[in-house]
Image (spheres, rainbow, N blue to C red):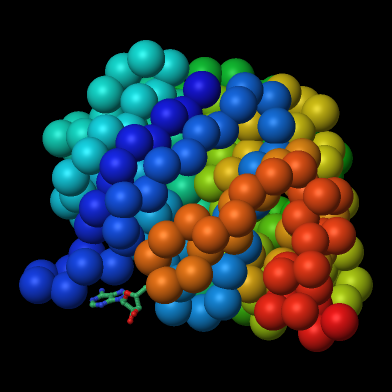
Length: 231
Ligand SMILES: Nc1ncnc2c1ncn2[C@@H]1O[C@H](COP(=O)(O)OP(=O)(O)O)[C@@H](O)[C@H]1O
Ligand SMILES: [Mg+2]
């Protein structure tokens, strides 16, 4: 569904992404794992049209290079950025409504899905986003992403800084989001958990893809074990 070819991108004179090629297949959970600074968020920013790049990104046979971020959202790519940027002065319900702003189709169905994945949000629907805990804000950010009717949902470090309980909830929800028919592109420093939750994965180091394979295969790979799992 997504085909990236020879993507180069950076900030000013600094090149961050060096000739990245990868693909995402419809219906899968794909993870891009790698340490802090590897370029994972930069890659998601390129896909969302937030930064310029050279190379090609095809989404369902449409070239995305040159499109504005809102057009990319309208095509069905929703990006949940790092650091859960919810609207702190808005209630949970209002945050969810904002998520459906550009893609309002199936609003009811998505709201039901969000509340069934995260019953806590239904209980707290009138609470202001900014007064929620870190874990609650993260599930709100994911739910808000789902409200945008994505075909491809991109999650940037959804487990970063969360308690073990919320980490488990977030990874479990990723499986349920996939079963609801949404393809998931997951970016994580938490290499072990993210590969376990994924069908396939890529490992990224300093702006390049260094390994790829099925999630389970990568977890058994000696380089992954040594560099990321401390085994
Ligand atoms: N807005 C920015 N301006 C300049 N450099 C940036 C910016 N954002 C990220 N970088 C640099 O790009 C590199 C990759 O960062 P990033 O994509 O955030 O990595 P990751 O998400 O894998 O931790 C890092 O060296 C980082 O310092
Ligand atoms: Mg990042």
